[in-house]
Image 1 (cartoon, one colour):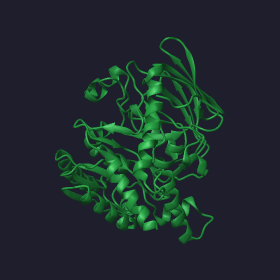
Image 2 (cartoon, helix red, strand yellow):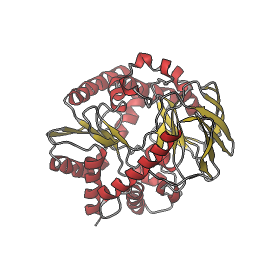
Image 3 (tube, rainbow, N blue to C red):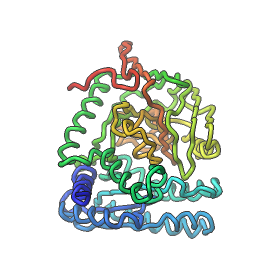
Length: 416
């Protein structure tokens, strides 16, 4: 039974996630998200689904977390950087041929525990910098791409410590499929309904023409100004060739871009953030004219400092996302220690690089982003601020005040 459901999950990734077109190359794993040994069987299902959809070639980039940890701990950064450059060249060649890209983020939450955080940050930033040209184009929707996950034993041990090791792995598979809305008889059909509901939410916000959002909750009282010409997006993106794809499976968010200099006040996290093997808890950040002027955490302060101090752009926000507490992930009441899942349990913000969600934004040169209020950074780190006590009000460009969230729920039904 599980094998049949996993085939449907793989089909969802290929048909809805990247929406693979006949004759297109499919890349599974790239950059920091190489395919782990535990995912051999699932990658085979993805490969089969890719060729059944008409793939010209399916490329899998294999990796190993133990090797990565030991290399960061003891290896040469220069040699590591040369290896990453070679990988980036191959990935870019496939991208130039019009490939679609799938990744399976499933890192051990404790992978870098005990290592020098400065060294971990240096290695991961080197990799991010080398892949930056590719990732800039990918997140600008120049290629179809999608993230979805599969369990590993280390990850399952962290999420379900109360179960036996064998039960943990099975429980995490069940949790992933439920979170991804892939546990029903026809996930592809279920996702068509889900995407339509999210689209209606985004369209409602676009019709409102929001000027500012005011957030209020425990430890949170802050305002986000939205840039002129911004728009809200939900799940589906489109390549320049007109191919619609879904970048995140799961996804429960409706999201947009804040004005880089338009964020003021204090915001507090409502869920821990697992970042590079460190659990950061009790985050509280104060903004003045968009810039982070104070960032504290009850635990993981050093890791939070490394995020904020990455570059100048990491002192500003790049994304604002709305997720209600009736999200199936929030309703599970369990921390996944994986941002792909945890960000879809809660309203969240992202420190760092923006998505160019303004009119004509995808055609803007990066040199023009700041002039249009868009932030640039090497990093894009989501942290969760939603919950059952969060209220959000919008002030529209006409001056009306409209409730958006009440007690963690959408304040109005989804309608066309």
